[in-house]
Amino acid sequence: MHGSLTPAYVLHSRPYRDSSALVDLLTLQQGVQRVVWRGARGQRRGLSPQAFVPMLVALAGRGELKTLQQAEVAGSYKSLQGDVLFSALYLNELLVRLLRPAEPQLLLFAAYQQALASLADNTAIEPVLREFEWCLLHELGYGFSLTEDAHGVSVQPDKGYCWTPDQGLLPVELSQPGLPGHGLLAMAAAQWQSPVALRTAKLLMRQALAVHLGDRPLYSRQLFASNAGVAKGDKL
Image (cartoon, rainbow, N blue to C red; front, side, top):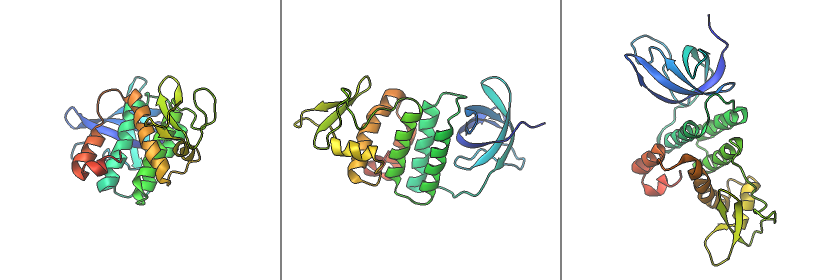
């Protein structure tokens, strides 16, 4: 007897025993779940663990490692290729590395769906990535104000700022390199198509995410750079 079906996406899969796979799923109600997907690499007909495909899944088990009971495609989807594929792999790697198992993330699940849809529709890549990164930080409880500095003073568009993990934004002298105030305010207004917002967000998100990702490099970033060139790879 199958459990209830829940929307899910495959984040990562690797071989397990003879024909199975260990799969990290992002599920709507149960957050990230690691499951044994039996027959994933066998000759039997059926759905295989493919990333970026909307699914409905039923899981069984009470421990950290669940068993997949049922999986079916939950709607139409587009195949991702090239830069779009590497960008989507980057989103998956962030989720696998940063999300705690079994913690529901309803808003983040919706943001992930929207990001995949935008990438599949050939929307400009960088605004999609920067908006998702900012949403991810907030939903994990690591967000901070973009309109006030650490002292509670309003961010000024003509001033520069630096970011620290312990305090957030701090003003810097104009002669020092930093994050432009008008870029931070553009981010706060969700002006993700703005060039200054994108430049500011890339610098800020790399600093903020690095604190939680640790020293181990992101495989998707290396893959993107090696296949698309250093300039393109820098989008991640």
